[in-house]
Length: 185
Image 1 (cartoon, one colour):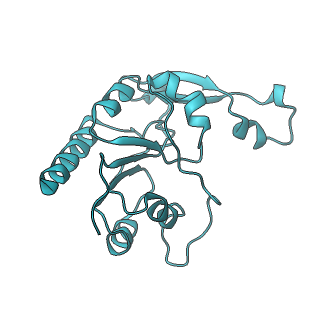
Image 2 (cartoon, rainbow, N blue to C red; image 1 turned 60 degrees about the horizontal axis):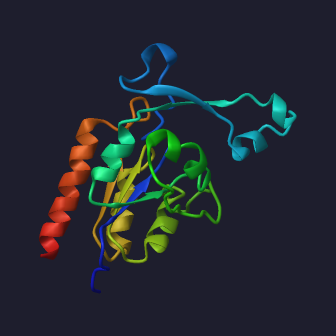
């Protein structure tokens, strides 16, 4: 199967890689700023309260990540339960344009093979395009399944949800894309 033209996809999870949600106020990773947002999906999770009484969601974001992501030779795509809400609440804070997002037919469901709930849908959605998937929950069995079922190169990059994306992660992404473009030439 010929490889589709254009840069590989960069499938970005939010909670973990971009928002180190298990950091604490006294141990927030260096370079991160605190933001408070109130996405509709967050309000909907608090059905027991009137919308005006739902407290905003605290996010730690590193503003340097937006330009660093855009500098990578990829086509970035939100790969998160935030879906299009990432464009509304996160893109402006990170200096990112509106990005396409992976629409989920269902979320947080079990998988008969123990894969992450995103894995099978991501491979189908990618439709044979090369991709790097950045997520705090991706496991070795996901990478193995993708390698066996996806016709194009794919990288799974697990990120520690306590610290988010680190400089070494950006280096790994850049090197993989360089290796990929070198193998196409």
